[in-house]
Amino acid sequence: MVAGLEKKFSSLVFSEALFIERGVVLKKILLINTGGTFSSVPGDDGLAPGLEIAEMAAIFGGFADALLQSMEFAALDSANIMPAHWQRLAELIDDKRGEVDGIVIIHGTDTMAYTASMLSFMCQGLAIPVVLTGSQLPVTAPLTDAVDNLRCAVAMAASGHAGVYVAFNRKVMLGCRTAKVRTVSFDAFESVNYPRIGTVNAFGLAIDAAHLPTPRMDAAFSPVYDDRIAVLKHFPGMSPRIFRSLMDEGIVGFFIEGFGLGGIPFEENSILEEIARASKAGIPVLVGSQCRYEGANLDVYETGQRVQDAGGISVGDMTQEATVTKLMWALGQDVSRAHVAAVFAENLCNEISI
Image (cartoon, rainbow, N blue to C red):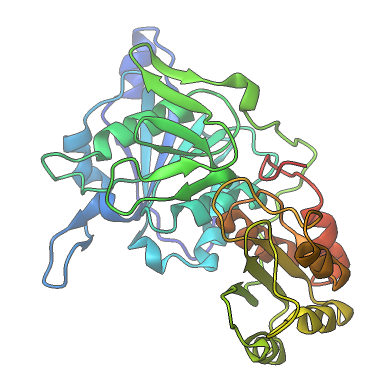
């Protein structure tokens, strides 16, 4: 069991003995609540997580194809989910994976894509589905999307297809390819630079088997991270002193979001010298695109080739969320530039097109 976590377990909706007696084999799904809008209630300072799963069960009702076991992990707005929570969630998943057929994590939407991406890296080799979901309205709201999202997540968790996923608005997306792209729409998430894994239609959950992740059964469980990183969104006129000051403060890894295909200015206000200085010192500097879709390619333009000459490492078509978490995860194993460059040259869980 994971040390330091107060766990509350309960069987929801169904009696396992009853279904065994009737000869029905149900998938055992662990439902973990971390908070978010899904469980929020109004307060003096606005919406905040306040409901436990047992209180929400009366609203979302039963699941004909699953036996649910529940657990309260936290009651947090996802803006307050930190890397330490990712590590504890990964340890919990590793602890429970032999006892259940799938895991569903209720999570706030704002940082769900970060959590899904990091769990994808920490929990490689996982033999069961782990599905994150949440909602844009609390489960108690009359027009809530919470119940549909949860039902889709449970269906994917019961599918037997190993991997980390996000279920939202009747879509299932690969966790390390998911991004929140809308703030108030029910269609808040998209699968970026990668096809959806599944869609709910009149026949149920239709899964695109061709794009399921390939389980890396030889991959070791590795819940490590180093969050001493900086993410810089380059803008015209940005001073090189920003990069320099962060490096001097002890940052061990950088991710720069460049323009277009990943270009960075090399004349006035050039930071190429800073990238070269960091690279020579063994500090990895990742470079990607500010554009959500289609990714970076540093081979096309002079601006990109100069970045590579200075030691910049392309992140290709990875999402910003996957890049940030993969960098933290790689640095947790080894802070050297050579190690990080090797990790980013490898496709670990379909997070990048090589």
